Length: 102
Image (cartoon, rainbow, N blue to C red; front, side):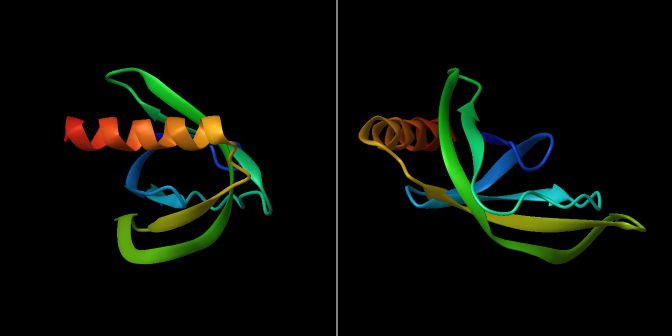
């Protein structure tokens, strides 16, 4: 299960997801992410399934781990915003499918 956001480049492995939001770990490259609401896509590659949502960062903290001497690992938590019924159902389906795939 992956997430791609408008606020931060790259495809990130989702660590935790619920109907309220998600979190993922990433290597801090020093770039600041957008503040406020932004677009994101949660996707499952097999079977191919994607949900486009809006969200905002509610937490972005260092984990204390390092990849290289100057590259820290951070965990970002995103709260989903303004979901309509279709998006909520698609997200429920995606969560159900992703849990079966593990």
